[in-house]
Image (cartoon, rainbow over all chains, first blue to last red; front, side, top):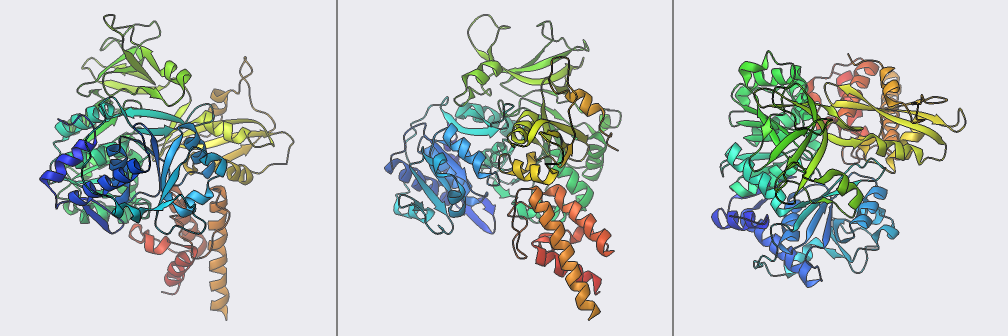
Amino acid sequence: MAYVLQQLLSASAKRYPEKPVVCARGKALTYRELDEHSNQLAQLLLARGLKKGDRVGLYFPKSVESLAAMFGVLKAGGVYVPLDPQAPAERIGYIIGNCQIKVLITTGDRLHALDSAALRSLEFSILLGAAGNGSFERDLPWAALSEYPSTELAVQNVTTDLAYILYTSGSTGRPKGVMLTHQNALTFVQWCADTFRVTAEDNLSNHAPLHFDLSVFDVYNSVEAGATLHMVTDDLALFPASLANFIRDRQISIWYSVPSALVLLLLHGNLRAENLPRLRIVLFAGEVFAMKYLRQLAELLPQVELYNLYGPTETNVCTYHRVDRDRLHGMTSLPIGQACANTEVFAVDENDQIVAAGSGKEGELHVRGPAVTPGYWADAEKTNKACLPNRFQPHFEEKMYRTGDIVTLSADGDYYYVGRRDSMVKSRGYRIELGEIEAALLSHPGVREAAALAIPDEEVGSRLKAIVAPHSAGTLSAKELQQHCATRIPKYMIPEQIELRDTLPKTSTGKVDRIQLSRTQPQPV
Amino acid sequence: MTEQVENVNVKDQIREFVREAAQRKGVSEVTDDQSLVESGVIDSLGIFRLVAFLEESFRVRIGDEEIVGENFESIAGIERFVLNKLNR
């Protein structure tokens, strides 16, 4: 039994050395090659002084090298931090400083776009592709791996060591790093392996970016099973017809993505069941799947098992629901379902009581078990707010995670998502704190007040809008503010629409009244 | 002569639309041959806005099967695609 993630690769490399493990951008690696490349990277990192627990940033578009980098860092005892290759340099610089990244694996142009002040913690970089002009003397090309031995390294880690840190939107204007251990990931991977019966015959897709936790299933369950992972790169993801052909041509058998990607495929991909004979499972997570589209998908792909997976990055998937086609027609909303194996969930109501099944009461969903994060990197305050002592279990000390999601529990034991306790929203599956958008807007010197809103949308979850009051009228344009936002927050967080007003409505406590603002927005059709 | 004028017009309109979209994403410069996907100028919502704009401005009908990377890789690529449709 694997107790650290890299053991999944070592085991499959012995069983399936010549099988392809990953394909992307016209390149493929076999299990043997991935094992060897990641060993070489680990040897390089150790030779250059990487210590157990040191952070290594992965900052490049996803490719077969992404897997070699992830496993190489783990084999060296390090912690990898996947960084959004499209995010603004300022935000990446913040993350590098926040978790003190020592080594950055990136491309020359990305490295040079980073502010040198942000790179103080950095000891060296490994550059993929053309190094570009003026790479630092201490930097190495990726090809330098070949100079290191490909022999396997003894495992130095224990299961509760950190494996990776995923940065997610933070309400106070800066992203926060969710720390995940080997045990956290393996709890989920083990459950998936059992539930979805992934085998060496499967072809998995990888639609999600690697800084998004949906990719944990794609990568580690492929490797665990000896299956092949087919990465969906941006040039495919944007074009539903190309994506539908990709699913057909790669004979994808298990697909996992946010619902909005499936809606695009459904509406514009011309999906046909007869073209997809190998497709057996479709998993979706990250946001609510509009029932009307889910019904269409269920009808279009009658042979495919559909699963709604639910869980924040802090726990990965913690509940699931297998779609029952017979019940689908009468349903108004899809349950998030029941707890995964080796995970316990419960809802706590406003009187601090655990919500009973069928009571109709609402409560905040809490999670306990080995899947739960130890907390946020270098942020004890946020960690203590989210990871609390479990007062419902008096026998020994343990933590439980407060999800912030309000749910109900039906008589038959299924949880249903109702809404959020705070102002976190989802758009195309991305988790977005409206406060982070507001902080980006307020950092513009001309902005006096700003409120970000999420307008519900069946296709993409929600669309982002902002209402801004400038210091002096007529001095700001929506476009200028969008450009300003682009220097601080990722593109998917930039409001599509920015309305300028003289003032914003306030609550009795003097805060911007988001509810009143939302109420005055046109309703979606 | 008239056709040449029309071609210039097509490219200008596409360029203006794409540059406007790019600026809203914080991308200040877009050359005619630059990849719109790699630079993040176009996302999954943007592509359908662009298609709607092309259909409306040039009175062409764009099928789902035509919304592929080859036709939308760059400003120059989109122009070739539209002119091809207009001249058909």
